[in-house]
Length: 226
Image (tube, rainbow, N blue to C red):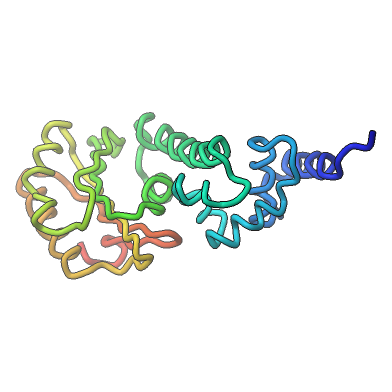
């Protein structure tokens, strides 16, 4: 009995990946390879292309909700959970690398990788504080607030209490903009100024306030706003 054509195609995809990683892969090809492990007995190329078309990009597929995923014909519960678990694995890996191993923050790149993985696909705003010791090693990462960020919910006193609890020497603030624009609002600027003022009074350094979105970020420090 002749083997289905897609079996050889899967084999070729896997060989390509072993040789070059995802270098040279189209978005749908990378997704197709992943889907072969969730849907073992089917040609998944059309489904991969449909997902990219529906959600706009590979990242869009990874950020899609469970309900949105299973609304696509061909995606069942196991596959939807598999896709969401993949994204969480990436977040966990980056958190282990940056947060749990107390990695020294000498640049924003590793931290941005982690923050983008965790926050860029969120549908609501989230404000986080990343606390560091005197060696600039990450002590803790805490969500201070979820929802629209404004002065009434991000209390400087509350944030400083958490900094003192962790015996932090420095803090990096991070929040996301689900709208897609990383440009800081007047409220963002005001909150940053208030937090910096409160931290300075306690001898705690604020290294930066980062705003992350899907494909970009804004650094208050880099733009000379701190």
